[in-house]
Length: 235
Image 1: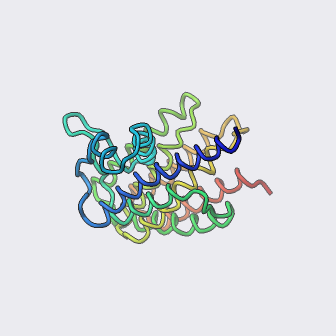
Image 2 (image 1 turned 90 degrees about the horizontal axis):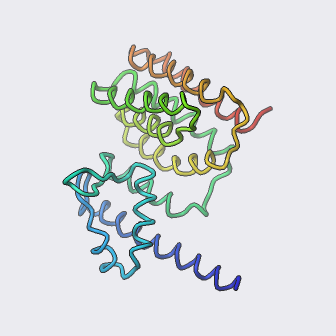
Image 3 (image 1 turned 30 degrees about the vertical axis):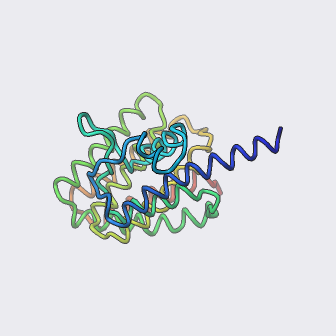
């Protein structure tokens, strides 16, 4: 029975990976671009010869990480991210077994995010600022009722990375984001004020970006990253 379960798990991973790999190749080749509609579930099943359940599972993972979205009258489309960022995220999602050591991940994230915040304070457009504020307030809405708001948290960070106007920075942050999410999902919160503290850290950061305070934004982000690391790995 155990061997059968393991085989089923392997097959499931392979079928999901087949779907993810196909979409990734379509994006890298330019067949699919930001805003383009994805093939239907039925079409993906026929093209890849996998069951609809595995297609839905793969699409659900892409939706969870903000790589696709479903819009009324348009269907499921590729998210408004650069093709390199999306490709990197899909690759990371499909290879969670190649995980990084948590401390290594957090140390590099700190450097990337600090740079992104500084550049965002200088270069963010009005559209960028609206997206940053959107996720900032959606995080607050969940935090106010005691929910973790992991998606909103990471989408805020992605929005800041996009506002940096550095595609390499965005690609690298996007690449490690799924592993950061995986690290946070399994973390048991013990601080009753954790959500309030995180919002305050975000608020200081967002206000610095809105004020075009490059130094203040970088410092606020670095402080936020250090606090996040301290919460995971107390001294």
